[in-house]
Each structure stands twice: as C-alpha cells, then as structure tokens.
Image 1 (cartoon, rainbow, N blue to C red):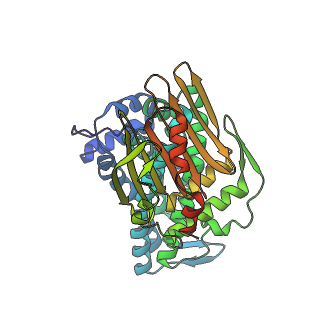
Image 2 (tube, rainbow, N blue to C red):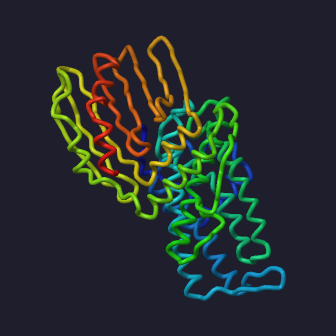
Image 3 (spheres, rainbow, N blue to C red):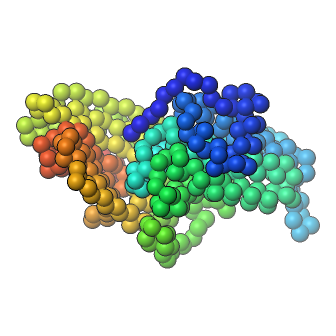
Length: 390
C-alpha cells in the first residue's frame, strides 16, 4: 500500500481555498480530479482542512432549522429541545467525520480488487472530495420543509465516479463496478453511523437503523461484480452495528501475538509487533526470515470493520489476473474471502484468508514459493482464533 506523505500546501487550507475547491469539484470535476490527485498532502490534512469544516454544514443547519422552524407534517409540529439538538448535532458531526475515515479505508482496501492502486492518501482524497455535494446539499436542513432537496447530494455518486480513474488508478472499464461496490459499503457504514448517533442521543427506531430493515432478501445484480446476496448484506450490517455498539470489542493484540509461532518451516521469527486501533480492531505481526528471504505474517482483528469481509462473500467477490510474471486472485472459499498473489521475477507475493468474517490472516513478502506463504497462514489455527471471540 502506498501512503503518500507530503508537506506541500493543501488547497482548502484557507477559507478562500476551500470555497474555490468546492466550486471546482462541483462544476468541473473532470478537470479538478487530476489536480487533486497530484497534490502532496496527507490523510490528516484532507480531514482537517476539508472534511472538518464541510461536515459541520449539516449538523449546524439541522440544529438551527430544528430550533427556529421545527418539524411538522399533516398538521402536527415538533420542536426538539435545545439540549437534545445540540447533543445530536455534536454527535452527528463527529460520526460524519468518522464515517468518511471508514469509507476511505474501504475505498483503499477495494481498489486493488479492481486493478487500481492501494494508496491511502488517494483514497482519503477520493472519498472526502467526492462527498462535497453531500456536504453542501445538507444546507437545506436549515429549513426542514426543504430538507428533501438534500437528495441533490446524490451528485456525489457522479463526483466519486469521475475521480476513481485519476485518483485510485482504477481502469475505466472497472470504474463503475468499483464505484457501486464502494457505495454499497458506504451505505452500510452510514447505517451504522445512524445507529451510533441515535443510540448516543437517545433516539430509537431511526429509519436509518439497520435493525429497522426487517427482512432484506433477494439478489441484487451489479455489473462487473455479479450477484449480491441481500440477506448476507443485512447480516453484515448487523455485525457492524453490534461492533459499533461495543458488543464485540477488539481482541487484545497481546492475545493475537500468541498465535504467531516462533518458527515456520525453515523460517525463524525475527521481529514481533502489535497495535490496537480501539473499536476499529487490533493486529499482531511477526517477521520471519530464512537466508535472504523474509515475509510478514499478520493477524488482524477487523472488529468494527469485520462486516466488510461478510460483505465480500455476500457479493461473491472474485477476481483473477494472470500474466507472464505471475497472478492475482481473489475468491470466496468455504464462505470466506481468500486472496492470493505471486510474482515470479521477484519471488514475492502474499496469501490471506478471512476467518469467521472477523479476522484476516495474511502472509506477505519474499519466499521460495506461494506454498511457503500458504504454510505460514496455515500455522495459525482458525478454530482457536475464532474461539477467542466465541
């Protein structure tokens, strides 16, 4: 994964720059995306200089609109208390920013599946700037009767699509599929964000709550992707909802380290590290070396993002690419996602399998063959790993 770090100026650092960027991305996106793609910046800058100010539009307008005009229909009217309105605005503001971060991580994760480039900074650019229309359209919440015009925010779907090729390097023939799949994932994230917001502010039964969708079923056909099992998609959203509500906290990374063996075949473990990402998950990684060859074996607890793996199986995600130098494959094996990649010239690759739609076990680096990487992954007992959260 590429993560471009730069210290150059970022458009949007001043109010004038922010307004110019908003106008440019809304009215001439095809010309603006290449400019955005070439800008040196960091994910943090994209969030603080662009998302933070624009994400405030919706919550602030909803707060003012609810207090000044209230809500009403068919002769009934309702004006929420000031305390509730403020708390709801704050929580929804924070969760909107969190949602952008999560969708950006998803966009980065999905890009290679569609022959694009895994680049976290680029993914943050694509999601943040692509969401501009949604941010701006939220101004209609200032006058509740016009809030329905917020549907104009769907223009963000087009903005995102036009940025896929120049920013994430996804081929044009796969841009639509990548956009659709990413937006499906974003919908799940929005459902979870809605649940968290409603839970914290004491509102239940929100129409955006995943639990409110009683019985999603049937199959959705996505061009270039295949069939999407909507029942499995609903189950994935519920899994993310449970994680967001703290029902399934991330596993202590120290426990994950315990699954990394001291040696694998002729390879010896030479380094060990771990990290915790709060409710987002945790991971442990070991480096294994044998002569001039070395690979990393990583165990990731996806926790709040575990539903993404289930979504992959629901979508029957598969991909296969082969050339003279090697191959790349993504498939669903025994109900779990599996990725495999090998490059003959460099003698490196990666092999990963999902475990229980919760964990990802992946070996990546230089090895004698892909079989050695598969052996490394097999060294982690999936049954014992699942038992940690059962």
